[in-house]
Length: 632
Ligand code: COA
Image (cartoon, rainbow, N blue to C red):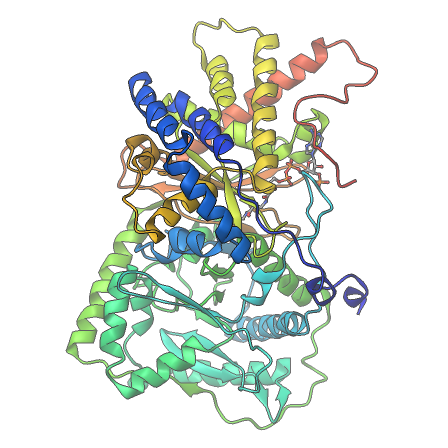
């Protein structure tokens, strides 16, 4: 296979990546002040500045914590990993659907009947098994950074968690368990959800993996078994869609019974879940498919045909609504994309092996059994009600901006990602007349066990630019506006470079906070300050998740009054998935999308007018937002 000729993760394992650095204390504190100053009132800023200065003073608390953090860095592979995992995911009590689990939405499939859908599912499962074999053999080609600072090898660890992780709910905090001994001889199985019933599909029989035809025939048996209304069991899966504490409590009740414990153990040790969804009778537009992938449409539709704790759930709707739901704690969206694209390419690239394959006589898949007393039935009903509220609350708008894409932006000698971030700031400003604390995920996979840090995109330079673009008195000339645009893009690009090289502030501040807690110290004032608390409420939560195959990623907002904005830049267009909550009267995804569309056009017009005016330079190499080093 050509894939094996490239450098693989097995080769890479022996070459250790650098550890995530701990930035200098003063640098982080100065950046923190710079990030918040223009977003808060002057009085509040003065107070915050005094607190920060005291924290960072020679011989102060900051120095002590920094010293301890540096010691931790020496002792651990990645000083921030556990802190970050708990803070970002495991301590969060909110329900996984919408609030945490991102999804990939596949193009709408056309199935003539259930058999077509079943064959599609069988093929998909084969693709997944193929991909898993590459992971197990450590034969995946190593990822290399693209875009800014291109060319560096990236940490591959997240891939090993794709099919080996399970997130257990806890009363106070969840636990992410990863089975690292994937080569163990334990039989491998997938859980198939169909009509809210769960079935064990063994993918190995007599030491040999099932072929596509065998999988398809097993799926046929599952679909028949699920049809049988008399044997139908309560929709236990809906419990996993609840708040984490509620689900942990319900799980405690469930596990009192041996049958339930056995069923749970099988789900918790599966490779992945495959959800065969019922048709939902809705027009399958992009937005509708995104919604259905994010929450399954609630109890009445496919909301109970899920098991949200499991990292990878492949959804195949009988009506062609397909995609992947991912539990986010083990890996980032980029890894999810790689896996999804591999499976899609497998499905469309190679001819089906159905016709030629021999079929063995296999024992039928087993239905998982549940003993549900009235108490559990009540808990299921409660979870269903809360999921319904979540379903009714999600305001989603998938918008494909078709006027231009990455290529136009590159021609302006600007970083496409920075440009889009500035456009998102403009859209927010148009909607709310101010900027807010913004999160953009930046990969730190250049480092051992690297996950992400935050690019704080609401820069002072972005504020200056959006003010110039929205000034009603039209006091700003094009020359001034384009200068401000370039300054904003420069600031954004520089922050990106700082973040991907481990020099951003969010992980560092979190580390200082957590180490103080580890030392049983009183919480330092800097972390009790209202500025700090507000700066960690990400009203705008953004992420670039690009794809090379037709599909898109989306997720929900992370604040009740916020927006989630996931974007997928392509050469000639950009897909934006904007989410917010209907219950909040300040937000509206449609209004945001309208502002975004307007803003993107206004920026393009500004760029075009400015290039028409500009004298043609012999070499404009040092334009704003130049990448440090191009991958080309
Ligand atoms: N002029 C011309 N071209 C430029 C340019 C400039 N000034 N600046 C950048 N470019 C080019 C790049 O060379 C690159 O080219 P390529 O498409 O051939 O690779 C392209 O534009 C994209 O670069 P850019 O837009 O600057 O972004 P990036 O690819 O470096 O991405 C991040 C920036 C922050 C998104 C990325 O570093 C990252 O961290 N991604 C992971 C995000 C993540 O984790 N998402 C999932 C969360 S669940």
